[in-house]
Length: 304
Image (tube, rainbow, N blue to C red; front, top):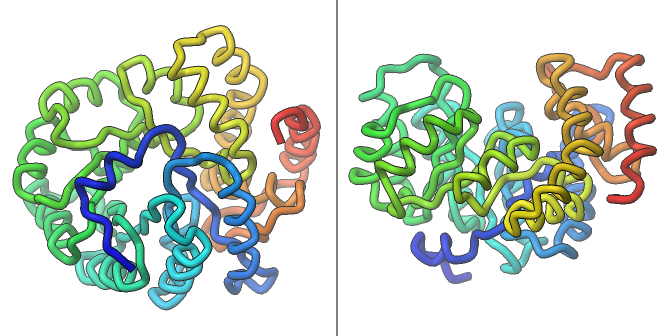
């Protein structure tokens, strides 16, 4: 298998990057056959990339060997149709190990999630990302989420330091700050809207044309409709999709910490896709919330 060069990668990213869940069986073991079936359905749609073991994929709940299984199965099912981006994180050494085993499994890029230590010194945080970038020749994406919320100068310095750093996935939703970073760094990095489908209007208003979608794991059809409406500047169509589907979903997800994954898995369970339960400390859905979700799914039938 030919390894994709970082500069090749950014030319392939436009539109929707899907964030599949990692399906588990009732005993919380991996459901790899379920993952494969989900990917087969997902790849019927023109998505631009797939993330293996990302945040929606419960990366932090996986062991290194489980992570390898997920990445390997994803690479095999995708079979070169679109780039596979493998998540990594935890700490410096494990992040390097996961990145390297993902490269050996055939992943096309690495997505670096925050390290275990919150509010780290900015210099030491840069060392963490530089080490991951140096671990493989693959393109590196930094996922700016939680306590990793650097300013424009820090991002510019990291981009100059790490030649494999190819893109930035925003997980803060602070459009003002993101505009400042983009203005400072320019086209050195590929800019991705990464906090959620509900922020598509804001991201696309500042020129971004690629976003990561957890909705795609349930219905890539809706994710692509959001991208197409936003990219075309069709504000009425976009507003209709947001009000009918996206805003109610994200309001339900906000009811409890951890629901951002739990709700997506339960949506998949309802429509017969492989998802299963979440692993603790992500929470099980409360009965009243599950009733509301089932009613919501009735309204989603046009986009499923």
